[in-house]
Image 1 (tube, rainbow, N blue to C red):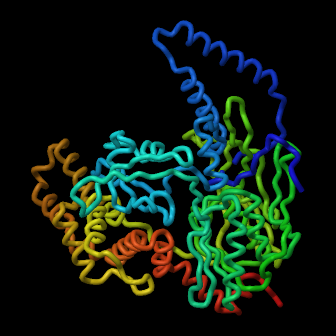
Image 2: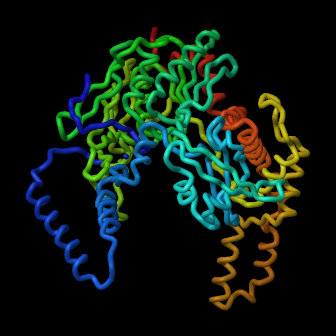
Image 3: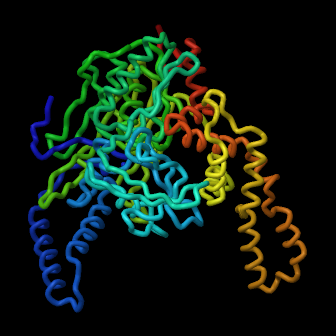
Length: 551
C-alpha cells in the first residue's frame, strides 16, 4: 500500500527514542500568536540592535533549541545540510570515501581508513596519512567535522590533499576526484564454522536486496544456519527492515504497525515478497547500540518465534520519523508515529512527554512495563528495547586500553609497523606475536606514553584535600608510599590486559591491510556473542526450547 502524501519523502527509523502520542488540541491560535511575536522580535533586533546580526544564524539556533525540547530526533536540515539527510536515508554522499579521526596530542586529523576502491583509495591516500592542507587551506588544529566538510563536495570536482606520510620525508600532494560515495551496508558476509554470517551496518536504500543476495549465496553452500549481526546498527529505512525480516517469514506476515496523530501515519507493514527460507535456524545478534530498524527486525523475529536473539538489551527506540519539505530548500525530520511489533508491544524506552529533573525525557522503569506474548506463547515485555533470549555479558573497555587507543604514541606505533611490514599474513593466519607485543610495549614506553588510572587520580585528590586541611605532612610518608605502589608500570599494567591490547592491535592492522572487511573478520576471531550463536544453533534441543516450540 502506497502512502498518498506528496510531501512525505521517506519514513525513517534513525538512531535511537519518544513522546506518548495522544489526542492533540487545536493550537492554531498559539501558532499564529507566537509566529507574530517571533517575527517582531527578529524585526526589532534587525532594526535596533547596536551591531550587525546574522539573522539566519539566530533563526537556525532558535529552531534547533525549539526542537530539542520535543525529542532528539526531530531535526531541521537547512538547505546547506541537505547532504546530511541524504546520507541518513541512502548512505550516499559526495566526497573522497575515507574515515578520518583525531588522536590526542596530534594537531592534525589523520586518515583512519580509505574505503576500498573509492576515490581516496584510488588516488593513493593511505591509512596513517596526516592531513596538512585541503586545497591549500591549513588543517592544523581543525576538528574532524571541519576537515570532513572540506573533503566533501560536488561529484566530479577535484581537490588536492596535502599529507605527511610515515616513512616518507617530503609531504605529498594528492589530487582526488570526488564522487558519489555509497557506504556498503553489508561490509562482510561469509561462512564461519558452517554457519552463514552477515553483518548489516545500516538500513539504507537497497540494503535488503544485498542481504537477500548474501543469504541466497550462502544457502547454496549448504550452511547449517544463518547469523544476522545487527550490533551497533542504529537504524534506517522502515521498508528495508520489513523486507529483511521478510527473508525469513512467509509472504504477507505483518512485521510492524505504526500509529500516529494523523490517520495517514497509521498503517500495517507486511512482507510482500517470497522468503528465502522460513525454516533454517536463525540467530540475530544485538547490543545496546542496536536501535530502531534493528529493533524492528530483531523484535519481529522474536515475536514470531523465528529467530533466537543473542547479545545485550537493545537501545529501545519505538519512534518513527518522516521527512517534510520546507521552504527555501529546508527539510524537517519529524517524529510522526510509534511502531508496534507483532506481539503488540512498543519497545520505546524513554517518554519524552515527561521531563526529569535535568529537563530530559524520563526513562520508563521496568516495573511499569507490560507483558506480551510471542506466537508460541513466550512472555516478552514492552518498553526498554528488545531483551535477548540469550544475554552475553561483555567486558567493558578498560581505561588503560582506551587511553592507548586514542594516544599519539599508538598511532605512531601503527604507522611504524606498516612502514616495516609491506604485507601481513592472510587473515586466517594473522595474529599479534609475542615479539610484536614486546615491540609494542617498548615503542609506547620509549615514546613517552604515560597513564594515570582512577586510583592515581584519587590519590592526587587526597593529597590536595590533605594539604588544604593541613594534614598532608602527617600522612606524607604513607600517601607517597601508596602513590608509588599504584603508579603506572608498563609491564605490569599492560600485561594485565595483554589479550585486549593484542585484539586492538590486530584489528587495527587488519583494517590497514585488508580494509573494513578485514577488520570485521579479525574481530570475529574473539567474539563470544558469535560463539554463543554458533553453539545454540548447533543444539537443536536448546534452540527449540528457547523458541517455545512444543512440536
